[in-house]
Length: 232
Length: 232
Image 1 (tube, rainbow over the protein chains, first blue to last red):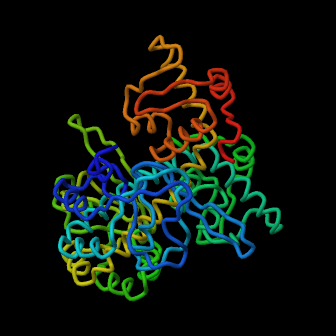
Image 2: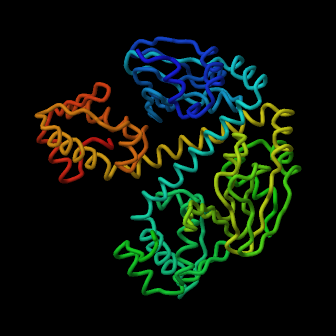
Image 3: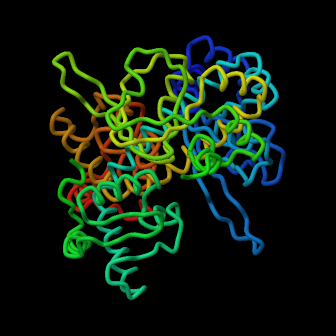
């Protein structure tokens, strides 16, 4: 079995915290075992605390009115779950069940809140840890998106121009967040790609209005998915 | 110009906070303008506060001993920067400069810390916001990685087997984090893929030792990049 402090220091929530704060978090952690098929918490229950998986596998799921189960996530070693409702003071939005014999670390909400109140720098350090990770993930998504998103964006703009019977100016009819999701990326990456395409003279963006400045280049991009210089 | 409260509520750091906390954050925000080419902060300076871009574009860069500039990030509207060192109490690790006329929101460190101390639920809510976003990004990276990572992982395992002159058992010589980065994904996704491949009888994982159970299937996966059922 892995050392509890190792598990804590390797989970994305706490990784990178100073040693004394890791120890303080270790001090409030409780080990819990669950059999395969055992329920951990249910939708609507008050969030009494959050978990980190030490071993095993946990499914997070909802059950529809017709009794159909929909799995939202499966979490494995090192991964936290239940922390979003616990931090935001909301009840659990879904059910959690062990799908293999599992050992979990449980962090009781009250003890965690008392710890962050007594040690204000803990919450700030956790914010730093999560912000840094978020930034790294943004870069990762951008790198992964670079291959396909510019082509998909070009296709979508050409489709919009046809649909709106417009020669060269289209109006986005959905929010930037929705468009990013439709194209398989995130708003930050979409913004950066649009800025690059604008910088290359392909489009001009003004709010939700986009002018298609170089139709040939956009059609080529939609066809080949290649935008010279977009990753340079 | 965009409403300051809109910018605050749409930035990943604060999006989803309750209205009264957004107002409290608005109350400590200071608007600052920078000309193109103007320095915002320099490497090594104490982090006196962090920024959110309202308009314009900011480059974050380092300068090598030889005077060569390396750009780390370019941030645009809605994006925060400088918050990681400020939250963790460290000096700025790089320089920031406006590459277009820019308007920024500045959040002074002391006022922000005073605010989180006076309102403990603010830090917890921010942790909830960042945790949720991190989870969404993890799913996004997993979806983007599914196409190529299993094939790359299979190739890497076959390469390791050849290099280690092993018939069917290889030892990973790098950490899981490094391997994830090498394959273009993140540790969480790599773990999940390995678990799936293990569940399908392709490999058996024990710590850093991996047994190649079905060499033909792995070679096929490395060649075609397709793993039946990996995304099902």
